Length: 145
Image (cartoon, rainbow, N blue to C red; front, side):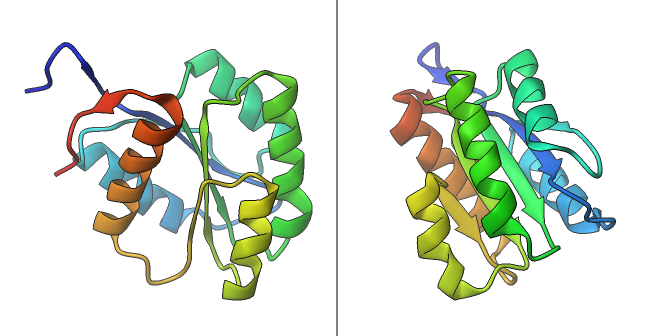
């Protein structure tokens, strides 16, 4: 049971750009739900604006971007800019997918809180998301299981 000071994390999972495959995103969404998080899945081929508007409408704690196309260095900054435009400074941004390790520092410099490479465990993903929410939003969240 979560105490009054704890909050259930709400995560928006989105496929950014022209990726046509969402099996991985659905696996992550299921794992986050199983860990006690509330998950909103926006589906395929989302624009940065669609993702950020959905995040505002759903009042999420986390935006999780899944990207396999290799366009992360071009598309993620557009999401970051839209988040700033909409005042989502305390919303955690995580990116996962087929991302070369050498791009992780670039993504973090852009404002991404966590980057998950192929092979990241579901436990690692849920734990890092919980920790990032506690750090960035200053709230205590329920422990993921």
